[in-house]
Amino acid sequence: MDTPAFKRILLKLSGEALMGDDAYGINRGTITAIVAQVKEVVDLGVEVGIVIGGGNIFRGVAPAASGMDRATADYMGMLATVMNAMALQDAMKHAGIPARVQSALNIEAVAEPYIRGKAIRYLEEGRVVIFGAGTGNPFFTTDTAAALRGVEIDAEIVLKATKVDGIYTDDPKKNPNATRYETVTFDEAIQKNLKVMDATALTLCRDQKMPISVFSIFKPGALKRVVMGENEGTRVVL
Image 1 (tube, rainbow, N blue to C red):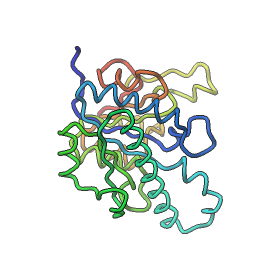
Image 2: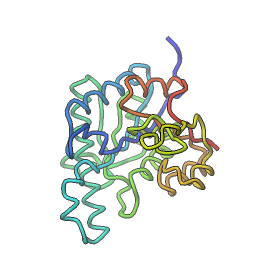
Image 3: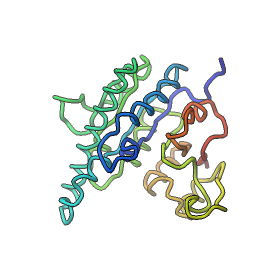
């Protein structure tokens, strides 16, 4: 069996990825397919940390949040990510993957608090660690949380799972001549506003020399191909 290119990864999943074709919420078939891809890399011995967004749940209450205080809305979004983390943990349990949820907000009745040392120990023991509640602070995105947790757990790469199989010169849905970048530098991504991640997340990864890989979680086997170092998606490098 070939050796994976990375021993420890941080996977960033958007909440919207869990919706499938639904308007909001969690699509059971979609979450099962995502978990199957995670299992492929766990079975290779890769240690996996996951940061998950909450857009699929928050979208359902977004109209009510219009005009709401930004910090309050952000805390609501953090709680949505914990709900997604719990759903992901349950799906992994059914797939035979040991997983733990750690929350940046203190809600110990449903998730243990984020403790860096304990998270690393879980990873070393072969458990998937799902990080909920973002950074625990308003005004920071889950992209930034992914960059932060990736650095904290000594991951070798941050993998951003999207609906598009990489970063393109233009919107591939609107421009059939758009081409996919195999690699792009952090500075190019920031200067060209390629929307890989928000500027805070990109800057943190650049400063910590943490590469990012952008790929489609909806392509069967894509996560495994990225972990094996194959030409899948787009790599963001120094």
